[in-house]
Image (cartoon, rainbow, N blue to C red; front, side, top):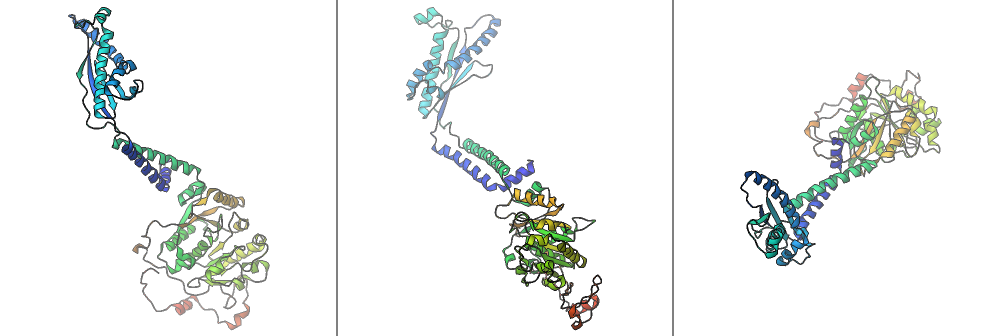
Length: 516
């Protein structure tokens, strides 16, 4: 995991991070509030030896004293030395337990000995340190005196090999030595950061869900073509890209249109299947909006509902569901008889799923389905197929073999997509030799309210309301088929493109530029 991925993980788990940091800092502050204040007093002792006339001997005496002082530091912590000091300070602990209250320090290359004593009150700290210092002076004097002098209690200047002198008596402390608020809170904050980072990394390592487009691209190796924001209006407005062309939703599909058109520069995809790993991933909305966005720039688009188990296009677009792809596959209707139109300008031809069939998988896997797709691709610039999900059923897998590319829609709203579901769907496509054009991340929560800025203050001109794929109710002569439909004797002769543009060119009106 590199630094960029780590930052992404921390950003994703920002709530957990802040909660742990706040909890740790609060725990540090609580320690300060509820801990018993401790006070520390310090005394300094100086070690000397009897003076000698020879200067050369003074150097060795200094080394001797430095070695002795380090031993005296350990001597001060012995229970036998501590016993009178503890009794004098009136500390209700045994000498062996009171050792934790004493600390000794010997500076480097020095004959000084610093003794610190800690107690619950300033007076106790001063009494403990002062009593211990004096007790250590007496103890060293007894140990370092010759046996004869020690027995008769004499104290001549040169009687003791080393002499300790109290040069800095213990003073009464004015402020507690612990707890220290800044230290405890800082330590709690740092500990919280470490715990949060570890928890976020562990959560990311064990997380089976992919929650954004970047995570999808890293986990699958498939590029992310577009990120579609979540909008409630889509439920009631399936043609939202036309009704609100300045919205972030419409802009996302314009980005998707560009990505699809330039995904393969030498051989751009024309027959595109839109599917998903699991149901309710937004594939039908993506198929409809992609078709409308392609048609808005003058492309001839055929939208096919190939989800024969759970068709949705007829319901979403308000079309007749009784005749559609199923009729064409079983031979009860021709494509030109089943086609309908949708969009504000009737600029996309739609082939709904038609009545449900008992064996939808066999119909989609038939050779007739391949011929229908080839037929649609001859007359249209793009054929957008709304296919079933890949994981629950295998209907979409053989259908992908007739397409130039596949758009895999993945919903990240509501906890993200399961990693195994996406990998299983991609494996199914690779089994039939199909490679996705890319992933379309759907239902993404918008993080900014500035998508509708004046920068997007333009409107793509809708094409005239000419039904480019002529149904039996209008004139059609196909150079490929060479026939005229049955109702052509009641229809007017064909008109040129210039005449058609003249008929539908209304009075010029300046676009207001306001959002739809």
